[in-house]
Image (cartoon, rainbow, N blue to C red; front, side, top):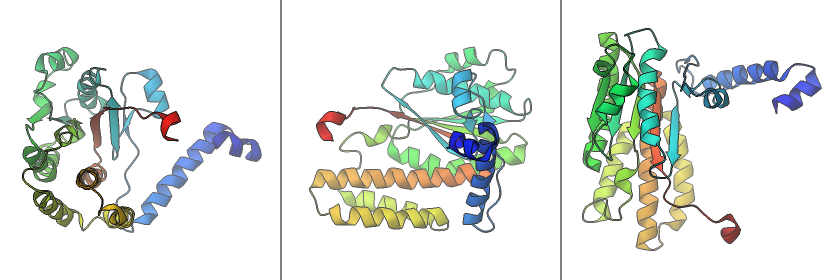
Length: 264
């Protein structure tokens, strides 16, 4: 698009891209009257090609997903991002929250990454969530308190990492007993998000699409409800990212690859 507009206007692609970015910021800020304007900041990943593709690195105020097959190095990359988040801002005045759901933190590996950053380990808050109940408590209750604590202590959190966000959702028996537990779980989460305008809008769209399919088989209903849970969680994390101007990085694992020629 930038090249096409540049050819018509006589401006360079860089100038056109800059104008489009400013217009996008103004448009988004006008969608929610009174919403605070968040300056566009990035945390470099130290990979030049990746930073170039992402216009500077991991954006603050937004959610970034890191996904790939098991064993491809996602966790190692996330550990390096945790350290980069500490040095991207003013020295010794930023922190990172690392939430793990699959395994305990590789502290030795993190120590290797941060060997040249004095006091780095003291500024990384680590939480292990062995099950969905713990994960919910941390993400929906404790995380906001941690972000507030960072601001008050003079060490604001610049990045929140969740490795991985859907680990406890993969098993068919993720939720105990019947779907009633899941439904009450979602109802509680919805109450926490009713004040977020974007959540209301997206929920209406989601309900319109899924309501006609909820009378299908049990497995389909289970999958649909799990997707709804992830949608609710995403809305919550997006609100935190924007409100506290923090980069939220979510890891996800690719478990299957669709055959385009078979299904389309």
